[in-house]
Amino acid sequence: MVQASPLDRQAILQRARGFCAPFRIGNGDGFHLDQVNPSETLHLDRHDKKAAEAVLAEGVALLADLQDRLYASNRYALLLIFQAMDAAGKDGTIKHVMSGVNPQGCQVFAFKAPSAVDLDHDYLWRANQCLPERGRIGIFNRSYYEETLVVRVHPELLARQCLPPELVSDDLWTQRFRDIRHYESYLARNGVVVRKFFLHLSRDEQKRRFLKRLEDPGKNWKFSASDIKERAHWNRYMDAYEEMIRHTASDAAPWFVVPADNKWFTRLVVAAAIIDTLDQLNLQYPVVSDSARDALAAAQQQLLAE
Image 1 (cartoon, rainbow, N blue to C red):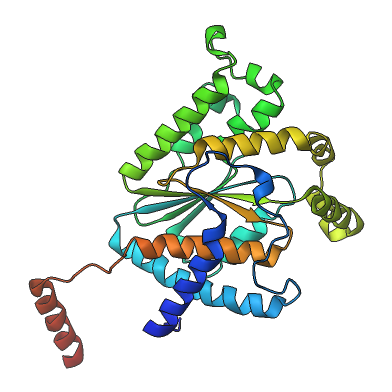
Image 2: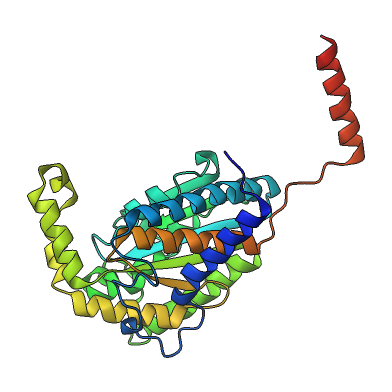
């Protein structure tokens, strides 16, 4: 991997902050989804994909270097959470942004509908089993936030959780928001850096992508009849996402509400946010002691003498 010069590195970092800062929500008070335009591309020409790809390539290379330092220092873990409506591009974003990362230092978990075993535990249980180890990046493709989204839009799913009746009340969602904030604060105090991404897709763009999946036989497998059923609840989902962000955004675990109508821009913003986060950790390679250096020198001489 070609290392960027110090000047290039600073330029990339500065550019990254410029891309992600407008979409960072560290305090959700008063937040509304309509504050972010799903088709936003900032100063970039939305048709100039080659320029965007070049910027992303720079970021991916720097991200690989930062991930190497994260792994070597073995102090922090990075947890990246992705939430979105269907067809917003979660899978593609993860694939492109993490393309340069060492697979040994990255773990991806896609959370589907909970199993019978999951339902016999609290709703944070299965996510807790998948937290990244120190030095590693963990990615949650959907997460415990589904418990404030799909379960809220479909109350019948809550009944499957077999909660004590006295715990199911109008305060349930407020309680879950509070529990999640406390949980993420706990993670932060133990060296797990949490960054959350909501890929903000417009309803019109989702329709276009669904039609493309239906018209292309090679993409038919991506489509499910349930996608249309969930689309019918669009407004309820938007309300749920808005409340989720408003009540769980914090400085320790901010949300990034990322415009998702242009996939290339989505990937730029996500990569920028990850780069900026890792850079702020001031990651350093472990310092080798004098005695260890002497041992290394001796090993070198031994090899040269063969």
